[in-house]
Length: 181
Ligand code: GDP
Ligand code: MG
Image (cartoon, rainbow, N blue to C red):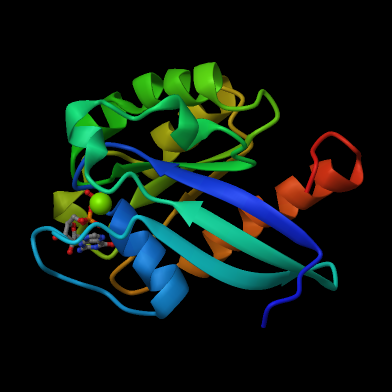
């Protein structure tokens, strides 16, 4: 498919190892890599979805390992209509860094960028969990993040939903004239 009504840029941010590349791969290719690291950085993913009968081309940018050096450039954020802010529910530190990532997005992206907070690796045994659903939900509310979901790039739980829900919010803003599509 090559024709579409809207094109939407997404960015995925969060600490190294939280599963950003795996989320992208699961969404675009329905695949999961269990390797410790995707050495060949998936730098970019494209997927067509339908929102309100409109064809939407999602263009998803992955940090491709740059996050370990905190050298994510302004061009990465430029024009992003959606931002997925990802932490790993089994690694508390990655949740504690979310405010820093949020500040980065708010500083460099558009003020109308739709942000979704994502707690990834929900498939893991509950004994491994270090961040509760409730506190993440509360964090999202307190920080005006309109969307929150727990996902698993491994089992695919909520992966499509996360990308699609964000697109629906972006689309509302495009329709309202807040955002160019
Ligand atoms: P990135 O650095 O944020 O891009 O993280 P990766 O996508 O490279 O994933 C880091 C590690 O976490 C890899 O070993 C993945 O296999 C693993 N991983 C990613 N997502 C999940 C998930 O949902 N569940 C589990 N159990 N492991 C995951
Ligand atoms: Mg990666």
